[in-house]
Length: 113
Figure 1 (cartoon, rainbow, N blue to C red):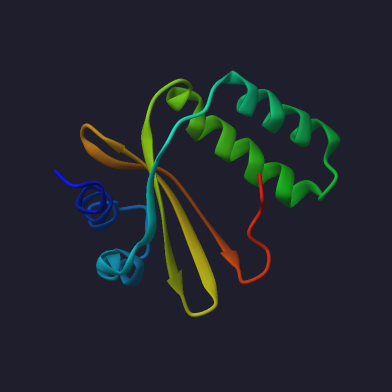
Figure 2 (figure 1 turned 90 degrees about the vertical axis):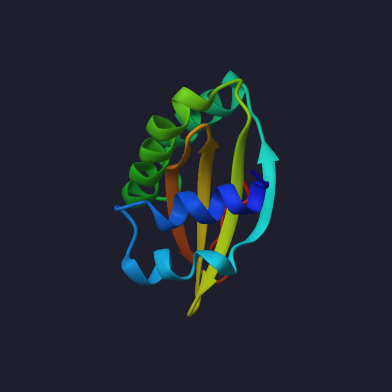
């Protein structure tokens, strides 16, 4: 299955996403294979510990870390979807196609890390 189709299928079948996001799965962008090692988890731990962007951001990073832990050293898909001033960011496994993490941001607040 093609990478973009894996993402579309995973998004359409994710019950944790709002229905309007699932319905717009065909509009995904920036589909790419990604991989990271333990150093990314260590980076998240450090950012959580520092709490430089406040408790809400630290909570978001803690959730991301928890969801990303099973992906350390594994290849996964990352894609985005834009919706009315929001950017949805997805981490998706291919076997089976499944959204393992999703976040959304307002324009101009998408993190660089």
